[in-house]
Amino acid sequence: MKGKQLVSLILLFSVFFICVVPFGSAADYIIIVRPREGQIFTVGNNLISWEPPEDLKSVKIDLYKNRQLRKNLDMYTKNDGEYIWHINRTTDHFVDGDDYQIKITGIAGSVISGMSSRFSIVMGRLPFKLTDANVIAIVIGFVVLLALIVLFYERKTHKIKRWRERVKASIRKRKRIKKYKRIIKERNNN
Image (tube, rainbow, N blue to C red):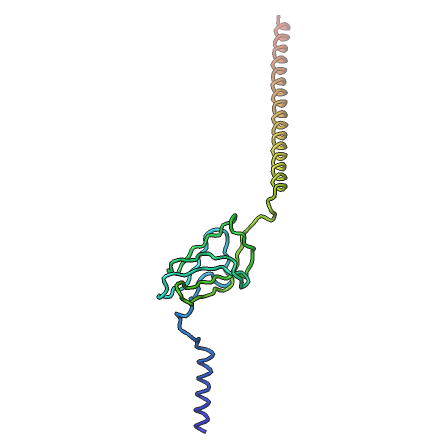
């Protein structure tokens, strides 16, 4: 019975090492720290970071969407564990999505690489394309709005001017009435 227990124990440890302990050493792949699973990258500066293997001097960084190469971010960058990626709204035409990944690969004959977890890119674009017709419509709308504001202002200032004229006329009328009352009073006293 002890022989069967020994064989069972050996099989159990074999299965443990096959299933739990990964093949290869940590130097066989690059561990990408950022972007993390579900992280959102937006227009502007975004940090990509990894644990740099000591034996690599430089790496290349690629962007994948749905497991297909979308763009090479940098063909040759120093293996210092950080890369600032600037997403530009006007030149980078990425589709919003949550299936992007970063792949970092060692350069100079190395097969060492690492793939990030899936993350999102949100460009925050306008909900319409700016075509010539849209630009013309926007300009016309702005001119009409400006014209309405000017008309409203002129109407208000015209009303204010008329109100001032009425007040001045009323004041003049009161002065005349006071003057006539004074004249009548002086005549009655004489």
